Image 1 (cartoon, rainbow, N blue to C red):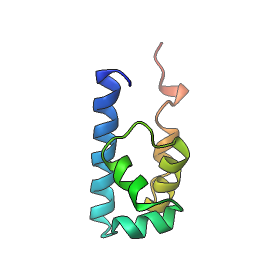
Image 2: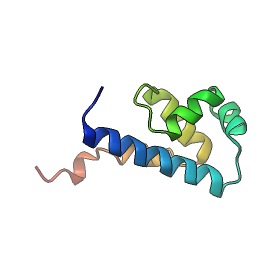
Image 3: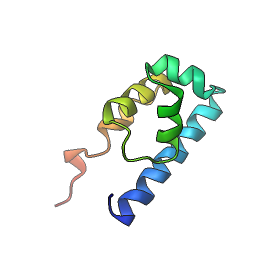
Image 4: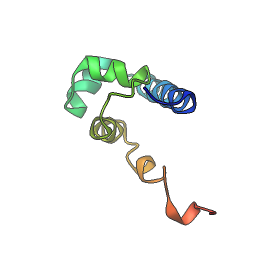
Length: 81
């Protein structure tokens, strides 16, 4: 199921993806075609569904022009441990 923190983070990610899509004026169906997935997968991603694959996320980020952000998630150069 996942922890409450991961659930909140995925919901925030989904909201941000939805915001990026809307700012670009792209409909869910069009983003699905551009990213090679289904409209239901886009809707699930935007809702923060943890069952959406990371490959789908990557394809959506490519379609939105944001793929470089994926590699920034766990940039080892910014790990202060």
